[in-house]
Image 1: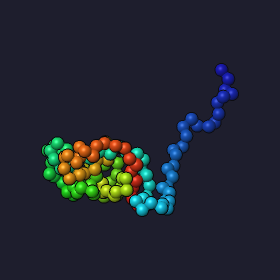
Image 2: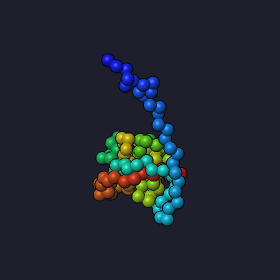
Image 3: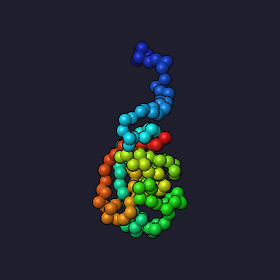
Image 4: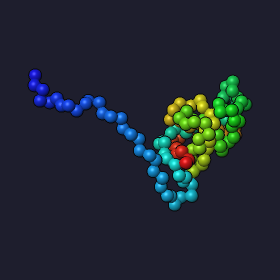
Length: 126
């Protein structure tokens, strides 16, 4: 067997360095600076036993009580991180969802059901 195809180049490449987020100016008033995390599955939950089981009525995993229009459950970011979804700013205050999902807190169970599941870009506000 010939060694003509072998080289001194290692077979394992060096790790790829992640680029710093690029901030861009936008003419839309609902767009915030920061960077995109990509497209996430968006669901909705409320404080009832159907959505929370034995934790119904309890504070979130961060210790804060959930507030509609503010609280989201997310596995990928530290508590207190602000994210933008469809022009609305939320704060990561809860867990209980897999990576790649965001669960938005709403006022009641019918609103959680009616809001459905969809996919949307999630941006970290920065």
